Length: 585
Ligand SMILES: Cc1cc2nc3c(=O)[nH]c(=O)nc-3n(C[C@H](O)[C@H](O)[C@H](O)COP(=O)(O)OP(=O)(O)OC[C@H]3O[C@@H](n4cnc5c(N)ncnc54)[C@H](O)[C@@H]3O)c2cc1C
Image (tube, rainbow, N blue to C red; front, top):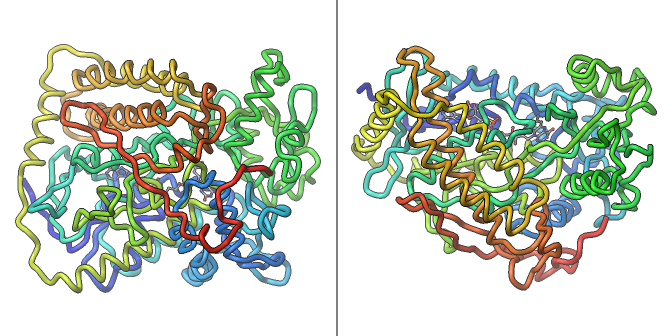
């Protein structure tokens, strides 16, 4: 098998991976592997913006930003990590601008900022304009800029290589096994440092805003290697997905003045969040939408959705600030949002949980912060944790940029200090991967990938979405055990080597069933409602029992082992504002 060496292997060419690569380029020999062309990474789909207390539109401060992030997380985010992110945000934006990101501007030339859900001034007083943007194509311009910078700095790219496993030696991570999509051959990448930036996993749900590639491979590979996942029960449903499609309509539509209405035309968020209304955090808005539907106040003949009303915005404003949204509504629903409200429903959007890391991206294995040397993670695949039980809009792009850079810096420090030659590469993971591929392709009978995946997406959508309860979650855990077995027994009928997407999807499916089981089991264990985790049978938050992170391992027999980890509440000891309390908006 071919072996390729680079000092650093970064898996994932979204914003987190590219930001780390730009940091390391010129200092270390760095390569980025991606199963997609880098510019097809989901980061490029980010619409609404990136938060930072620049104070360009009105007075603002990183402390208010930290307060909103912690309150928005329903008090589950780690305080120090949030402080690191919010304090670094203004610098990170200026840096992006200097790298070439064409942000939208105010008339006086400064970077423009708009309101976004849950971002307020003066500890919750009123919405604040904190989110920087480039129309509604913010992720697109950031991704292009960082890709250009990576090319300029001669980062090596391996596009269309799908990583299938980690290589480990003497407790260190020292490489990955990947399949080259064009040829179907396996390649081992040998390195002194490996970083995962493989993004989110919304594809395990039926209705999602996520790209097809968001199958959570990094999470599945971590579980296979005895690495735990943290806070997986917290999965965000964005309130405004296009009805029946799930395609995202950015929160910026409400930031720019759009409002949600029920079937009676009422602006119902006034009842649920009297002070910030439609700009409440996403968990609250999504739950409010479902309560309207439950009470029979939905829109349309089926009363099964609500409406996002942009008709009070001028046509010029929509064209200037929300051009993508306008075209989505026209292309997918055949309506002009200047004239007609857009039918919407919540859509599975963002994973708060992931591979646990410290603020420097180092992957940690337990509540004491024990590290696994040689391995870093950043971006949506990681859980630092800055989003806790619910992420605020525009805080993810910030997370990618801040913690992608920090991971890059930390890898650089690590490599400068540890001057050792790379540890020899063990071949056991390559053997494991080869065995798995041969068994999928060698079978004469077995289910198809699609039939198992459809059932998985249905279980997760029906039982493990916005409303959850003991019975539904227990049922999901049982069904997922069966799905694990069914997924292991599928048959890949396509025997070709080049671009064998059936084989690649079969491998992705193994990851999907494994981490879905972790999501369902940690949701079953958490007998409270917090942020995006809403339990009908335990409707209140229970800080006495559950102000803690969950940390789950996958055992060799496929069972999930659930453990816990304390939340860092360090800011609460000095500031009353940061002490957990009931969330009202
Ligand atoms: C429609 C949409 C709009 C959004 N809008 C906003 C917004 O306005 N503001 C905001 O803050 N957040 C937004 N988000 C969230 C944010 O965009 C994501 O959380 C973020 O882009 C994730 O970035 P990432 O770098 O972690 O991974 P991604 O950008 O998802 O990239 C993942 C990378 O990993 C690679 N990869 C994955 N698996 C493998 C494998 N097995 N082998 C090799 N490569 C692999 C992929 O090829 C890809 O390059 C939005 C999300 C969506 C879906």
